Image (cartoon, rainbow, N blue to C red):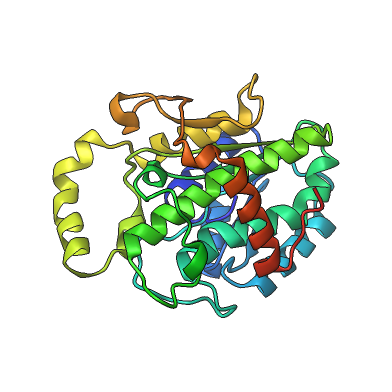
Length: 285
């Protein structure tokens, strides 16, 4: 599980560990990784990696391939939200780079081990925010050289998560692989993601949080769709799971629908090819 030291990732790690899974906690901060692993118990272990760096992503994938005889589930959870414009050391706009490109690369690098584990699943965390953009991925300004809007770039990265998931599952089905890809969203979950929101808007969000918290899922409840996608029988691939309450804000997990833009095979192929070009990782599908 990437980003497993806080929020949804940590909650999912505890939920899956309680079901008997051996969890590999992937995070950037060594102390947080060690704390999370200690809380999960002896069956868990940690890996330090910053998915904003292609070098780190390649190194952690190599260590996992060397150390794990099988990978039943990969959960692409790590992410940032609405942060001020920053660039990764590889020159990527950070929200697109971390939320999508890092997970595209990690998935591609781990795919041989995943496909060797029959019935394995790739679960990628998206957001209802994918509906709030204009359905575009800033093709002509992918690294925000010409302009940057934190919320619009976040929405684009979450749309990319879904386009990637659906395209990955189509390609896996095309080769009759026993591995499937699914996506999830947590609804409105009480996590630390708001810490990335800067300026007056961020301040307003933090002040309003105590008022809206009763209507939100907790972090543990926000992880329900991830737990369902990772473990429930009957998950077929190419599906999208989220909270079942009104507006998909909170409530128990169920299968939900995504935007028309997320289902566009032309956009999905364009994103796939661009991701290979940017990361240097070709999943070989």
